[in-house]
Length: 146
Image (cartoon, rainbow, N blue to C red; front, side, top):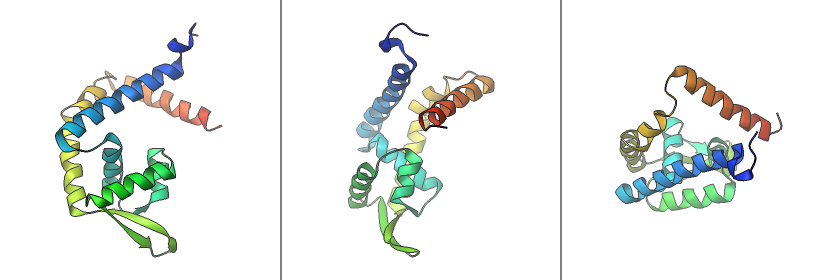
């Protein structure tokens, strides 16, 4: 157990996330004019396209107003398009455009040669990686009341 809040698990977790987010923002903005959050949404859509904005919120652990504004900005830049969900006329599905798909590939390649490389160097082997993932999953479960 730590003796101060500044040394606590929560602050260390926050510091790790914020360090990753700041670095990704700096590198992606400088090279591509893209934010880390835009990178996340583009990458999630590259894995599974044509999902609702609500599904994007769930998959990237963000709130609807943030994702709504983010998707509108990305749509204005021509990276995504929104269409009415054929199963629910109130919902909108978000799709990558060809330009968005190409940008995501370029971003992924750049990230792999930079902050992804450094991030994946943290766990030194498969056992450390599994332990880290298990610990992070336990944090999520504990915070969500499970």
